[in-house]
Image (cartoon, rainbow, N blue to C red; front, side, top):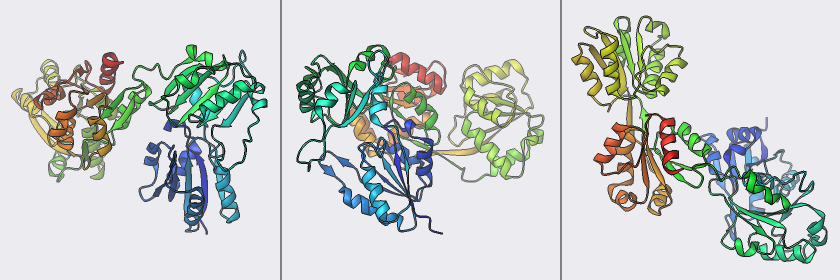
Length: 504
């Protein structure tokens, strides 16, 4: 059976969260993804590992590939019995040349489907606090290209009709042509006092909005570069009341998250939700230990174990994964009490339907010791601690001083991430980054290893460093990094709150 099909998918205007459910499904199942310049590349992370990902973007006068060549590429890939997702910014049928590609597919007998996307003419003004229609302003709305096909002998835009016949006018990609657009509108009857907004990189943390009126918008927007949308109409006045996105506490701030790739999303999502531009720069990777001997031994003596102390989510995951692989289940923990450091660790334990018996008020080893001094005589008690290979020795040593039989086992290894993103390093050197976050001592040490001490010296005075807790802060200071943002609560929400309070 022939699998060939092409999905012409609208990726939305920039915010990756604005792609449709069907559009995301097309990305996930594609054998080939052919994408444009305005597509948010974070969407490509959802592609299959073996997918062939091809960039064919056009930017100004720089064309990776001419449209005719793109058409042939799509057809040729489909003829290889592949599922092809053609990913286009915004909506493929709104000034996206999707119609041309669909016609070419039809002419070559290639089956295709159209997956509409949220177009920039609606989403971009919405993120700038401008509704394109409003009962008190207008009930009509028009979409117009800011630059027509250059091979045309004359414009097909009827300026006389649209200038006064439509309430809200939205011009796509018209920054360079803005003087002519303004001239034509005023010439054909639109008041020179009509409100105008020019919005660059709409729906992304790089969004810039300039407002004015027809008579002065060219001067006000002269520093705005493509890509941008121009909105003309009385609805622009509503921005003063409805500007919700650009007023977020971290809007305009660029923040680096150094957690492992698997764990970065939670933190990143919180920061993005507050308006930040997040750059994920994983400095650590979580791997299996060199061998499972000690962990297996600990699991086999669960029947005689009194306490398990989990110090991290990774420890929880590694322990239960190994327990289940050995043929065990949660019944093996009958009679064993559970201690968790931090709410995230406690929540992960609860996901396995295990009750947490002890959760110290402070999320550090010192607090665990103080709690155990109060709740139980540890003399002769057996304690299992599944941890990382480089965990601090303080906790087991102090518990042993209290008389406990502590079995510390390596449940997982924390290693330096294999490669750093050169583009992010350049952003640090160029002063583009506002904050670098550290969520463990490992992220500090590995960050320095990856960027290099010489490079660190060139930018560390330009950025602020944020730490999740005192142990992480101490490690940073030992490496001559000044931490100016410190979480009062040693959790991701606590660190996020500290960042907002310091720079928001």
